[in-house]
Length: 131
Ligand code: T46
Image 1 (cartoon, protein in one colour):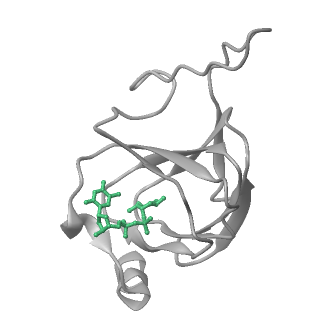
Image 2 (cartoon, rainbow, N blue to C red):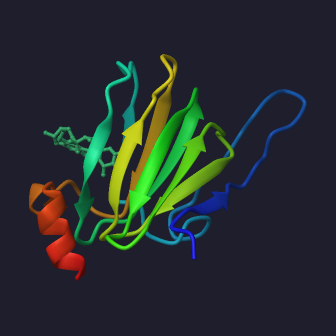
């Protein structure tokens, strides 16, 4: 089974333009505790870590980038380039983000507050965790 889980977001767009409304625990499978966004990307890869508990929904609201997800057994990847789809990243998933377009804006909805102790930033350590 692919590690790429995409959610079609509630699309309220009309002839005036686009509108997506996301409700905690309703349109996405967790309560939202934190929101952050990544912009002005320098085409330098990001990520290279996993989270022990954190779940996230990532929406590329402008531009595009390539996500690689890895559960220690297999890797899948996807180009994110649509503001009407969200990529669900489950806990214990190694992620890398590559090939940001200059205009890329990534909006991330997170299930937990920021906690550095939730990160696994070493790939070998990650493999030990998922073994
Ligand atoms: C993910 C991708 C898409 C905070 O203080 N608070 C926060 O909420 C975040 C996300 C980061 N930080 C600090 C921690 C680091 O010192 O900002 C610095 C850069 O964060 P990080 O290395 O986590 O950045 P990315 O872009 O490599 O990864 C982040 C998320 O951590 C990650 O879960 O999926 O964005």
